[in-house]
Length: 312
Ligand SMILES: Nc1ncnc2c1ncn2[C@@H]1O[C@H](COP(=O)(O)OP(=O)(O)O)[C@@H](O)[C@H]1O
Ligand SMILES: [Mg+2]
Image (tube, rainbow, N blue to C red):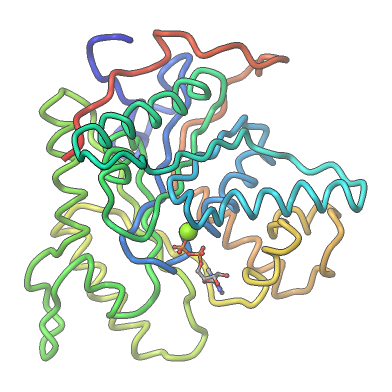
């Protein structure tokens, strides 16, 4: 492993710098300590969207106990076999928590598990999409410190926003950042101390309702203020649509429906939803896939693996 931590160039900070760190995949962490915010759903949709653009993608499931992403992919594989359709599949690795009882040993074990998983894939794919649990685990924090881009799906609710900031109920002003924002900030400090480029943090609103106009507007105003205060970008995100729930059993995404992968018929609402997913991926401003994909997966080289920052 190289001595210095060298994250991939940050596309938000260097807009023109579309180049990626040669020979290494861009790490996109999907994180929010709140469960049920749409992390796993978003992770698979983004992974499939990137593959549809010709990128090679690996997915890491750090919420291996629930294993939603792994189950989603199992369903996808089964669907492809059942219907004899070709569906792009990422290289998927589950990274379970350590079962060791000693805390220090468990952390060392988890660090080794995450690094092994990254090492397997980071040199052979364009993007590593890491799905994290809806709780504050040491392993999840460690993964956050690897993020080139951090994407936080947020339900359009003040209950969910509470993990990012305390809000004054009368004025809707941001009183102070709260637990998750502080955890992200700590991981950012760690990276900065190690000379790493800043993480591009993007917060996306999820399950946006077409009604509830007042809540939607208030959330929007508060998020704008918060973005400046704690340093993230806002992506419009995804609307509340039943199709996101329905697709799980077939392992399909909206992007597969578009390409005749079978499954539910494509309605106007699905077309709009598919556009939302594409807009979200565009808003992430990720580096372009490498030009000449290797025909076969070569093992990750030592130089492709950045040295890990410490977890907070
Ligand atoms: N945009 C959406 N519209 C409707 N349901 C959604 C949407 N995004 C997620 N869901 C549903 O919300 C629940 C939680 O989503 P999930 O991706 O498992 O979240 P997390 O991984 O953060 O726990 C699931 O039932 C999922 O189907
Ligand atoms: Mg999940």
